[in-house]
Length: 493
Image (tube, helix red, strand yellow):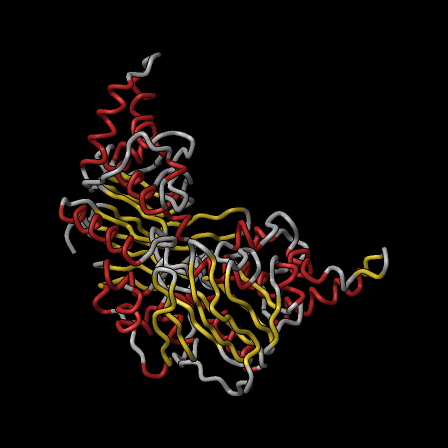
């Protein structure tokens, strides 16, 4: 490879008795797009914080542009041209786009009064570098995720960035927005700016990166040219496990539907939707972000109420006007945003598991602690939730294990129908395979499962049928055995 811009060798750091990084190395050249991958907890965030001066390493060396760095502070990192764009973008939601872009410059100037004319000039210059068309007077809180990301990139380029670190930049983006982001990244590459792209999405790694480095359990396990990598090697390096890529085939499907929508409509979201789910099958629903797919899931669980059509359970019409009605009809819903909608993060793992069946654990006015503990032990074991103490807060777990808590909460209700919106968003490859295996096992036991997702490999691998929704209408239905990603994409578009 060309002369290195960043070279980190044999880096080590511990927090108490925990060895976060044991002996890792990372090398990036100017104008290179380098993917750093690994499961949650592997050390990706730690090495970023060392490079950006947030943490001080215990051992190893770091060079930037040929200069050895003994100690790095965040200001040193910025002055050298290192910019980190975190998943939350670190923007002020209550300020305008222009104020977010000009804030650092204005504060650094030491002036007591702000020149709004200067703020405008700084902001216009920042967005022009990536031809980003945005209302500079708009509050950041009103922007889409993709627009917030562009604001963060524009801000990074204001400080003569030479290395931009992007932490899981595509987590909440549509395919169209991912394409737009990749176009910007390629323009930055052409300008000689290096990109450290942190992701665990295989297709994106192969599409955008020149080279890769993979961490596992605080150690570097592989690095090289992305062109020398394939899906199987990537997954093995990430997890240390090998997975068989098998498309789900239902073992036994009920003859009669367990759940149906007939001419279902929610004004302004979707209309005239017909849908049939049988016990033992996994039905996929896919579409673009604004297609109506999420609203469809919310309506099936009673969070949004139908304005037309009807819902049937086991052939009989039921009225589901709120989540309690859905639960009473043995329907569960796993939301896309588990952090704000699926979990009580500060409560214990155990409390999160049993919350949906708390009535069953109460005899009159007494709460049966023995039954509670037995239920928690059962689901921690059954779903292999990795914790040494289920009384720890849910925040102590990785994304994949948090998703297992959400699954356990619903499975404890003895459901007939489970609807999952983006079941593996933000979880690593190993956890993704494990969650898929759990869903396929549940379907094999007779549960009717609906997966709502725009992750086409996930849909194709796990669903026996796929419905495509576009602009609020169901436009296609496919059998998984004879469909391709491109065919589904064509229908989605």
